[in-house]
Length: 120
Image 1 (cartoon, rainbow, N blue to C red):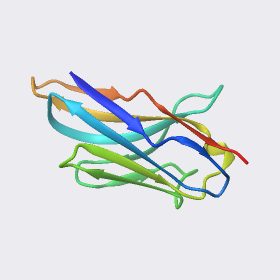
Image 2: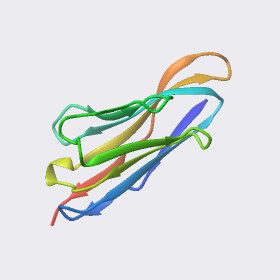
Image 3: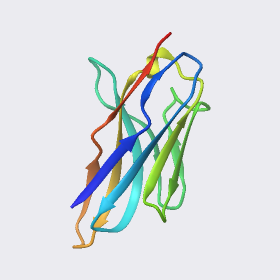
């Protein structure tokens, strides 16, 4: 069994910063891509950013230059530094990891989500 637990969400004023973290635990052999997604009210879940096991990154156009993803392979964690936050960044943010378990199965796992609200 693999679990993902996010932390770091909250309320912040426009222009402010937040840092999200996600810890992957359980029966893990390898973690491949790690991603952050978000879902705003009434909208579909969207990919925000991704990082491969070697450190290659991808950013959606709406967050380029403002968000930074990083990972610590030794700690099985992925973080998202969010700067210059805008009201349109308000959403529930979900961590996702593509994991090979100790049993050799490969699957995507999701965290429970953490709320980010950008408002004055």
